[in-house]
Length: 270
DNA sequence: GTTGAGCGTT
Image (cartoon, rainbow, N blue to C red):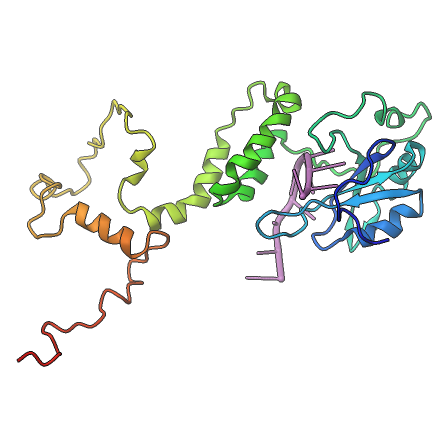
């Protein structure tokens, strides 16, 4: 049986879910099945994939029939080299329904009373917990459709476990990061101040009148930006840009701009 | 051809 997750979860009544992390993006359930099945009876293996690309996210869920077997697999497969990468096997903390697993049920095997040295090759992966946003940024990247969908479900468990951890982790760093990513697109697609549409009622104590006398800003020219000497109005331009290419507007990538430069009708009117 | 913290399928 190599068909896992074909019809959803078969039966999670008496099964224990194990979370396998650090697996390659190419690792499939079939590859993990023989590995985990050797240490116990694997009921089902599920590997979440991306909604857009459909690629594996890098972790899989292995369901065991018995906890003792699962525990053994965790201890045995945890830190194993798979596909040239060290995988991390641990009991799942959350359920498929965003619900917590029975307390002590699955975790009861975790804190084994035995003198088992848990300190394995567990690399310091726990860099910054608040970085969970990072993975989100690339997850949503540019997908407004699934935004609400994922956001909704993420918020569900977020408030359950991540809430207490976010005491004051309002690191503004994430802003810098996101900005860096979107900076390119933002700058390219929105040469104007279209971002204002987000906060129209934004009262700026310090107007764009930057106190920079150094800057050679022709005063006579920027005196009336709204008025254009030519028939080129900002509105007109905006409309044109939107109609031409709202997604990616290249400064010189305008092949259509010079299409059929015929001042007069070559239809032979004259 | 891709990144590498983390928790799930209709």
